[in-house]
Image (tube, rainbow, N blue to C red; front, side, top):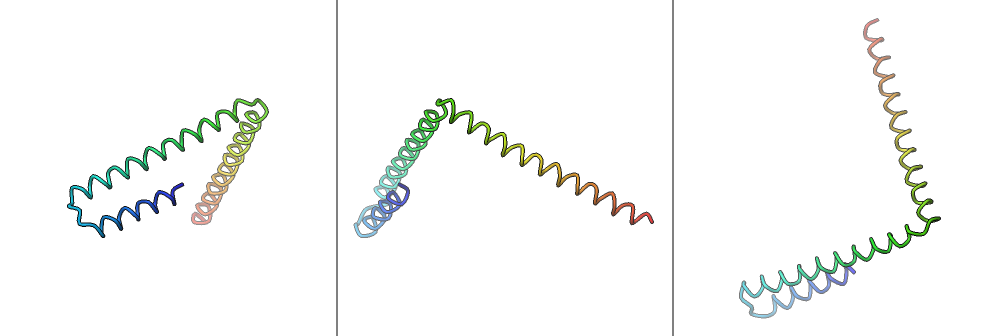
Length: 100
């Protein structure tokens, strides 16, 4: 999708270079292309989100995704707590060593 649009932009840029368009025509052409790209990207995002909503409406899929999200969040939270505890413990040990 994006590569196709990039190719089109390159072709437009080449056509602009090859032709004898004035700067206002160039700006209009590029603005039109940017609007087209943003519209297509927003359409793709909308399609993807509606597809995800359809998948999530199925009870098994939804509960599975939620479980995986909770598992991932729980793992990250657990790891961050362990790392924080280790850092604080190490900091206390270094402080005790400096006092001695």
